[in-house]
Amino acid sequence: MTLEQWGALQDSLCQTVGKNNYTNWLKPLKFSGVQDGVAKFHVPTNFLGSYVSQNFGELILAKLSTESSSIRRLQFEVAPQGAQNAPRQPTTARPELAAQSKDAMAPGGGDTLPGAPLDARFTFDTFVVGKPNELAHAAARRVAEGGPVTFNPLFLYGGVGLGKTHLMHAISWELRVRSPQMNVLYLSAEQFMYRFVQALRDRKMMDFKEMFRSVDVLMVDDVQFIAGKDSTQEEFFHTFNALVDQNKQIIISADRAPGEIKDLENRIKSRLQSGLVVDLHPTDYELRLGILQTKVDGHRLQYPDLELESGVLEFLALRISTNVRVLEGALTRLFAFASLVGRPITMDLTQDCLSDVLRASERKITIEEIQRKVSEHYNIRLSDMIGPKRVRSFARPRQVAMYLCKQMTSRSLPEIGRRFGGRDHTTVMHGVKRIEELKVQDGQIAEDLELLRRALEA
Image (cartoon, rainbow, N blue to C red; front, side, top):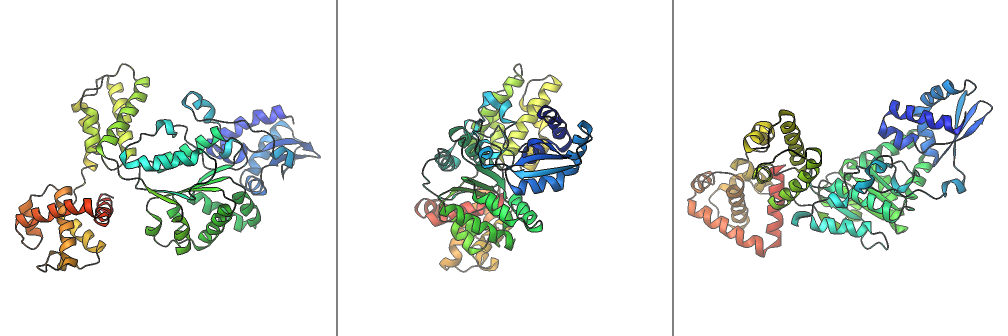
């Protein structure tokens, strides 16, 4: 069995187990030779060797047996120190080197630690910046520059499809280019939990601790998924502390702020809030239009002769407002459909092709739903909010609810007034005007409105 034969078998293994499994688990294996019927491999950590042996050992042995019938078993050993510290080939996610980046999924510019695959499309060059995400983008850029840690951890949060994962991948790609010698580990909270459980089951906790404490930058996506998992939270807390004590950078993302994650231990919430917490706000019209224009430039490379009628992008940016992924998917479908039927992209074709997406984006928010959410948010009874009492503790939530009804529904002022205990439309007008003034003057009111709007649109 030679290195050339092992190289040829790797392609076959990749086709059998899939690209992700191969990149994460089998690519880091270094074939070192055969002795007395034992095929020996060097691995970065004991954890990886144990995992490969249990999950892919029989498959690898079967493949090797086709080349050499003398091979009867496998042996995985941690690579000697010199081999682990050998110079690594820097990788990049620049568009012109996208083909190379697809084969460079392991974190940290090398094969030291298996992390989640990185998407070559998710770089800073392809991230469209607007007012709702400019702070998150600037913070991510600053971390990606490397150098001394200025805020640790960086905590990014926001709703689905607002760019959290894009920024996480972009940071990892940029660190690869700037500091290829660094160990950058990017993975989801679910993967962290899976590896923790696997290590417990296999009694390999020391390998697990060693692996996670040896990184230079730890990136954990969707950390809300460890909430309620007591043992996983415990290990995450200790890993967090160990890395911070070593002045290593931690980047976390979630779908809500640390203090709002239910069943997350208070000590973890406190740690997550100790750095820079940045909210990716829901996209506004201008940002959605900018995203669409950027995506169109990419689609024109694939469909250079396809005509796009003026006004279509503006229509999509206005109608599909909650999720950037849905917006991008709608544009991809539109270009593919127009190409297949051989027609230009007109407003009529857009409405026909995307009828289901447009209908789904028209979810009607009711006055009753707004009233219920506002009363829950301010911890008052619904009957008090729509009742006749004018005390401030009821009047302010009532005005907030009226304002949201005016902004988020198509109901008239008289109808809104009737739903609030039969009040006159002038009362609604006064309430709306008062909230418009307060949201500029009072940061708490502005924050309440944003939280309520996000909850209602979810």
